[in-house]
Image 1 (tube, helix red, strand yellow):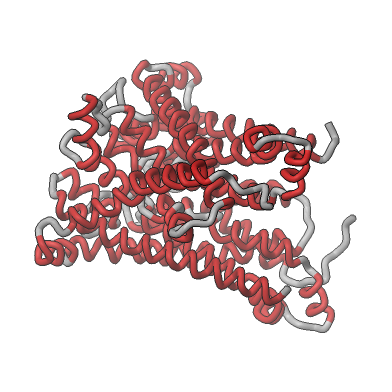
Image 2: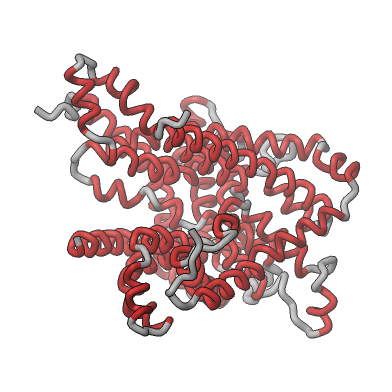
Length: 276
Length: 276
């Protein structure tokens, strides 16, 4: 149905929206495309398949993946505890979950680094007891990414868990299911889509994360050098072609991750509405 | 009998896991920053935070944040109005573009501005002949800050305006109210809290942005160093007390933001309940 709206201000608000969007987002993105079209394909392939660059991608993706998995488990537990239980300090717990959003990444980065060096409050314990080094290793990067990703899974599961109707659990209970069966067969399938979407959001954010990781990583080539840092160092050498090539691959990875999530979410909503 | 009640042991085990996890990952870094900031005593702390360059960095951070919040508020209101009150072709595409900046790595955000306004960019000749410097200068920092916080306000407003519908505005328009009168008297009261919430989130992210700003800053002490960049500079110069003292300013702001967030959320909820 198409009809002219009686509410005024369409031209004005549309104009402002498109103008600001163009200046801030579209024109800069276009210049990325234009610059890319000037690169030769063989040069692009050569740049992004250099062993050091490949290792950067590997480090970024593997640490982000592990960190996001940890956040799925902890996020589920946190959301469950916050929705289902009452206990002293609940408000406080709920409030500090957003801390990684509010605390600047560089600040989190230097603090986590200092805590986990072999002389740090936490790092010393792990080094003395188990001989494990945290700062300046991939473990350190993973820790920083867990910090960054905590709010994503909690905040996407929490509202879904709040909305689950008591009837489902009552039905399961009457049919003789115990608590564990009810959780895995009734509740878990309901919250699975939100878990996946929390995971992808945390994963996509973690792959591109720079501020909190750059201090704790130590940035040893082939060991703890992350992809965003590689872009940064190419930029500092004014090699814009190389920086752009690395960035394009990262944009492609982010795009794939988000599309997979969009696909899963649309499959789920179809299943729920009974279309598939 | 409440079938949602877990047996005591499981409940308390999960609660303890949550408290331990969040204490280690979120609270410990905060405590560590404050403790290290005051390592050199109150005098040392005051000296570090009132350092000439620290003050200049703080001022630049405040300026960039104000710009970002101002422009994004203006943009966010127009975009939300445009996307929720009217039906038009390309609406979905427009909202996808608005959300795009949050999925782009901050380093890539910096890169696209370097490609647009830098020496090899299409606009460089024009800008240079007019003596306008954008990258490695304050305008670049402001642009990067706007980019990374771009959808923060519109994203808070759109769900509220969608839920509210268009009936009230249509009635006002039929009775002859003009655009700004409709907005001020009809729409604004509905989005007040959501807008404030968006502004708080935008402020939090804007003052702490590191990666994108780091690419675009000339790293000139006292000129193009924001607070997070100044912290990095001190940290890399092994002035840890100074770095953590400067960080504590941002920690205090982050805590204020978390408290504001909770207050706004509560107020907003209360108002919705009353209206029902």
